[in-house]
Image 1: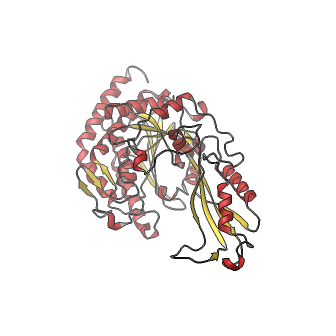
Image 2: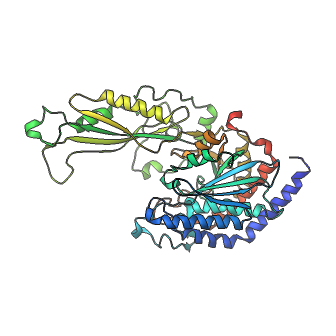
Image 3: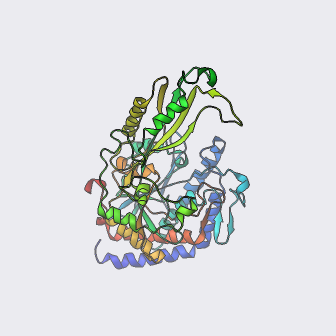
Length: 477
């Protein structure tokens, strides 16, 4: 971008910010209208509501001025796609979000009806207010306001709003693969995500991957009398316990052969960044713990967000009722999941885990291992990407403090899918706060945060327009 164009962009940005502030009251009312639609993707009885939510969102994107808007089918719920490409030579971004929400149960714990949004103390309460309807609308509002000064946004924008995030996005990758030209871009921006704390901005730069298996151990063909058969027939629960105990040492270091293969060492910059994230005061005590546990080669913070894990999520079998029942159970089961990091392939890790489990099975039982759905690769942005500086500038101008990089210990498959399917980085630029009650009763979104999200996104758009050369692809890094 030439120096001569910078004053024009600065003036246009100021006009866009003023336009957003002038529409602030309508933003809250529209978010309430959107939340009122019970777009619960996990429950087929809400299929009509899912259609209604997609139609409502598509119409709102059109009213923002986006000239090309379509509701595109998938094998499941549709994707709302909007394209506004009126800035030749400027960067192109794909803005991702989702319009589906979690079920509202348990209903008795809500102070107001989950789909009758209520404004209390500067917070809009309702299912989906934070996850992810406020994020979606913040991006739409930012595009609308950014176009106010000159008739079009300063960058080229493609919206991709799906309806299946809350069920694992099973149809998103096939949809992207079938429409790669439609989504060709220089950067993806996720409007789904959050910041470190209330009013404390951060930039998520990585998330772990996921894979998992279910183990079933079979002994006799029926439960047996433990007095008659105990000591002569293998106990599946004891056999399963033996298998599970072989997976880690006493410090939690995974003993599965090849589990850590291919994982790059943490760089000094990464370790410093993780250590610099503010600590949650009294977190151990609030969890009822006296100390952290795990591999002593890494700090607790590192183990929680950038190191792989192997966890038994559930184990069951045998008699669990009141009193005693002297039974030798015929079956036992366990579910195991692994959080993965860069260098680990979900399918390969699941194979290695399965091989270990089968090899560790004691005599007298048969063991079956079934891979669980929901796999995803880890995602990691280099800390020195210039786009992170631009995003930091936009957040700092809005919140009054510089954001810092953070990692999420969970799994967000779509971020890595933008890399693997479209060859672009995914910038998390969303503003949900940790107390918003995501997936829980009384979910809410602060009105102040809604306005801050719109303004920060406007600043990001103009920052990208001023610095198109700042966008690097993963292939260039």
